[in-house]
Amino acid sequence: MKANQFGPDNPSATYVTHKYPEKTIDTGEATINYAVAGEADKPALLLIPGQTESWWGFEAAMDLLHEHFQAFAVDLRGQGRSSRTPGRYTVDNFGNDLVRFIARAIGRPVLVSGLSSGGVISAWLSAYAMPGTIRGAHYEDPPLFSSQVNPACGPSIRQSIGPIFSLMSKYLGDQWSVGDWAGMLEAAKTELPEWLSRAIVPMMFSGDGQVPQRMKEYDPEWGRAFWEGSVSASCDHARMLASVKCPVLYTHHFRLVDENDGHLLGAASDVQAKRVCELVAQAGQPIEYKSFPQTPHSMHGEDPKLFAQLVIEFEAKLKSLAR
Image (cartoon, rainbow, N blue to C red; front, side):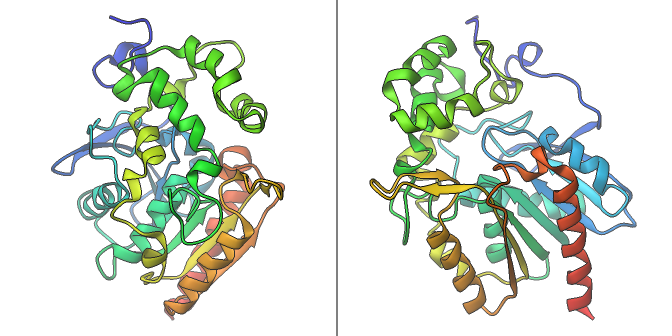
């Protein structure tokens, strides 16, 4: 067996135990792993991780939320202990997994909150889930438009973090079939744009040369799907946002666009965020936009107290709107 080969087929080398017990549910195509905090008499909250993140990225936030919600944190297909599904990593499939998860594991209307790619899936659920399923949706710094190859506005995946996803796909391989972690770290010095190598690589990869736990639990085919554009090929973001059917909280974190070449450091540009708000409002839904330009990409990871506060406040507003 290769030194760096991780995933459900090699669990002893891949997984560690966590604070909350883990469960699984079969959605038909994929087995979805998840954890729950809080009692069933509280409002239901679905927490959706970002790319290269497993459910336990929400552990600190769950500690703060369990008194207010029954919080369900999931591993998306291709991440954590959930199934690997080669050739089947699309926003539509991620979303449909969660529609089935809500029906089978939660069984009642739910507030959803997703980070990054999980925020795009939160948007998908707010637009395409069955009527009455989603009470409200929190988009936590999602790459709406910016994770597409040909977005309706603003920088594309090729002008933002995309080259890192391409690098991971090349050196790690689908389902960790290559597993050259050391080669990837070395190649990052020369194969990535200088601005990206300098700004992003230190944040994503540990400096000791070891594979971070969150990366062991990640199928690099995700990165290839984003770089090549197949992940959103059947899910245009503008059309999706124009179909939103519930109230939205959108938190927009650190971002910087290079005025010379248009490169985006962050999840979405201000132009893209403005368009998100316009489309949701045109769909007839209230959207609360909150800008946190000094907050890192993962608010729930870096500032779980602020994250919990915002979600609790959003739940109170949903109750008020329902009266």
